[in-house]
Length: 143
Image 1 (cartoon, rainbow, N blue to C red):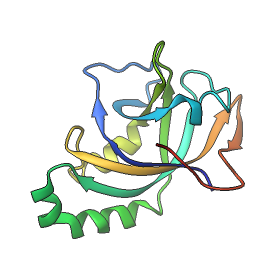
Image 2 (image 1 turned 180 degrees about the horizontal axis):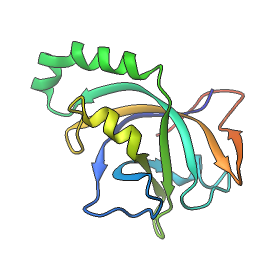
Image 3 (image 1 turned 45 degrees about the horizontal axis):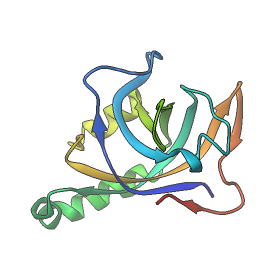
C-alpha cells in the first residue's frame, strides 16, 4: 500500500535546494494535502518508493520506444528509490527530490528531466530515525 502519484513530470532546478548531500536536483511534485500535511513531515524527510511507470512526454518517442520504457519500469519496480521532501513556502504542492543514487540509476537509462513522466508509489518515510508506512491500509492516489 502507499501513495501513488501518476504521470508526474520529472523536473529539475539549476541548484540543489536540499542541503543533504545525497539529494539530487531532480524532482516531481506532490500535493501537500496528501503527504506532508497528514503525516506532519518536516523538510528534508527521507522517503522510499517504487517507480511504477515511465513515459516519454514526446508522443513520437513514446510510440517508438514505449516497449523499452516499459522494460525499464518493470526493472525499477523491484528497486527501492529514495526521495527527499522539499516543502514550498507557498502553494499547495511540495517537491520530492530523487536521492542522488536514484537519480543516477534513471539518468543512466536516458530518463531525463523535462522529457519524461514517471508514476511512483511512496511507501515509507523516515521520521526521527523511525520508518513509518505511508497509507498502510490502502493505496491512495494523487490528483
